[in-house]
Amino acid sequence: MSAEVLTEEFEVLESIYPTELSIVSDREIQIDVEPDDAIDGEHPFKLQLSVHYPDEYPDSLPDLTLVAIEGELEDAERETLLESLTEVGEENIGMAMTFTLVSHLREQMASLVRKRADQLMAEETEKERLAIEAEEARTRGTPVTVESFKAWKIKFAREMTQKKSKDEEERLRALSPKEREEWKRAATRPTGRQLFEKNKNLEHDDDSFVEEGTVSVDISQYDRSQLRAHEDDDDDGMHFSDSD
Image (tube, rainbow, N blue to C red):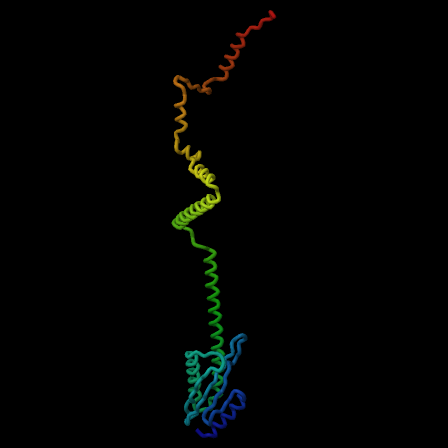
């Protein structure tokens, strides 16, 4: 490679990239590269492409390195970009290729930014979906089964018993000793229901109070016409005197 050929390429690059190009030596340059298409709202992203030209250039590929100036560049992303630049360089062997390499790098950086944005959107969408599912599960609650209802009923009864016992203790503490004794006697006195359940044959036991020889009468066996006949007989037997 003649120095004149490389000097001519540097002059062309300086006219295209007046602020981005830095000539390090007669065989090395650095170019600040940004994505071809900027995406609104995205973080700044800028790389520095270092190009070292061997003696055989342009019949052999230059040595390329990438360093992030603004934003982040993962190692896997750097390797992917360098591999893509190598493929383009091999297609341009024998020609001045620096401008072609920079143009291709700008396109690949734009694709990388779009890929990052799509990935971020997908992650946010997944987070939102999981949050919605969690909220639905919280509001929907646990499906009720026979077993879960029985367990809940036992737990509820235990809690109510404990609450009732606690309330009674607090009520007793507020009473005087005399009132406390009276309350305890009232609490142990059986209720009407308890008395009834204790003697379910109460209606049969009433027969023992009936006097011996007493005849039970079924009023439904009397006919109304017979009752009227008895009443008429009683009227015929009555006599009034006007002696007075």
